[in-house]
Length: 161
Image 1 (cartoon, rainbow, N blue to C red):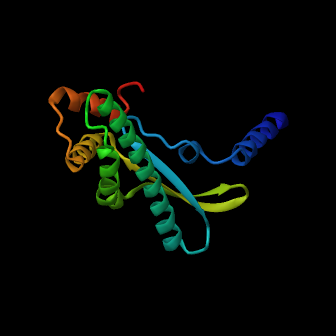
Image 2 (image 1 turned 90 degrees about the vertical axis):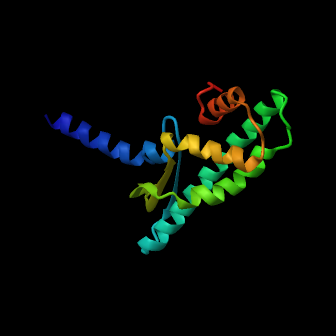
């Protein structure tokens, strides 16, 4: 019985010392976007929260930029302009859309023996189509229905690549 209790305690300690929780280490949202950022606890919750959320939004903006660059490559391969219109539009769309996102999760956690405040910001699966449509509209590119669906599959990660 003591061995089982000791093993349970050791497992708990190992889990705590093993690094940040999965939602922080590998933020993910099937069919959507997710980013998590942490700041060391300064004792000022409001300020720490503001910084962590802003950094998570910046991480989402980088994800959006990466997906937009992939759209530019896919569109160029299909005979589109190849001028980086989606990547250019991503900056504007990120400023307009991502800045409004509320955090999906905010928690204090112990990371490397220090207390940190972590925030996760997400773009829910249902918001991916409107985000894509805004990206296309802002880019000025004209897509037929087939190209729009192919590029949306690329953007949303449904294309398998």
